[in-house]
Length: 484
Ligand SMILES: *Cc1c(COP(=O)(O)O)cnc(C)c1O
Image 1 (tube, helix red, strand yellow):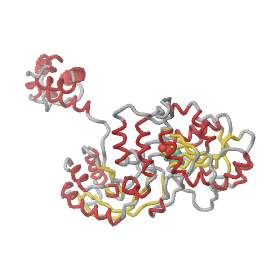
Image 2: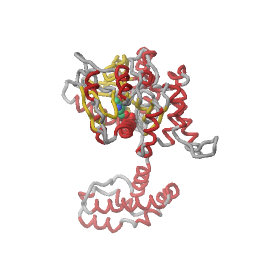
Image 3: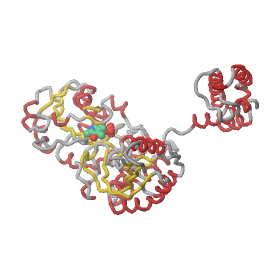
Image 4: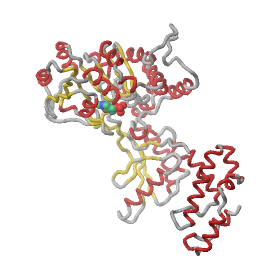
């Protein structure tokens, strides 16, 4: 193939014009490149469409390069470049990562890692037609919510339940279905913003409800709600301040205190828990989060929470409450647009079945296992991996075992941290000069790994919290490919 002679020559920029013109005239046609041995092998594997398109793009780019334009690879033959181009086109975009940030439920890393039973169940269920909306008793059309409704009611004690795409959707749908065109009363201390522009006032507006703010940022009283009720009031709304705390001279009205007022006025009371752990976390020595069970028992008509925060399942929004409220929510047309697809529904069902067997939770739910891992066990992991990490990073870095604090994450228990352990990595430099650059370069190399290793930078060190590292090998295998 003539293209080899093209690419093995001197740098294009230093070539005389006539050489470039000669090389241009030697470039093969798309057809010729595709019918080369490498091209044919690629066609066998990927089909002619992709390979031909890639060959065309490659030749166009090479031509532009020879004409003095943009950057182009001159180290590899055209055939090799074609193989590389095709491989990168079909490469998976999602990649597993090692989360050594210490934030257990990390929104940017996909939040909860699914329990193996849920993964197996999704795998099995997605291979066949299934009774998603097919009632096997009557042979009639069924309701997909019925797959999980009984489970959710058993676990939470609610009369009824429905599920949607995420908790943001759950809140939007609840407000739209119960209060569109009317007023919703909410405390000024609870106008939360969740990451990614989910702001309570905007959600109210999107749902078509008018927000009536009561109280102040730090203190809201029962009388504030009472005085704001008008014939236009459709909903009393509580929002769990899941990603911040107001401390000091504060007062809030609990759901239990608000429920009698709501009942007396015949106005539904909704609470958005955000995370809403389905079990009492204090049982495991973790800080207490309000549970949907408690909110139902306190008299809330609707409780909303996420499927992939402390619950430890797939992305989903769970809406539980009274039969009356849930029926209205399910009948609202927007429900159809926000409903859960069969993939997360299957994962949610398998995760919820675990909650019927609480003794199994700690071993099966990765989120709970990581949150409850003892500092001694994490320290042991850090000590195990430390020598191999030092070896992989080489003499230009100092790797030490160090105790540190982990965060729960994703708007759950924002100020609570858990004692943990891990590694601290420091570039060995004469002084502070160049330290920031050295740390940044190491992070870039770590992100470029086939399985990227993600830690955090703190006080001129990279910290790797080992809380979510299950197997030392996961880290050492990944670091094999490190190029520093
Ligand atoms: C996280 C959170 C939401 C949004 O839930 P998603 O499942 O991320 O859509 C809404 N409200 C509160 C209070 C939250 O903490």
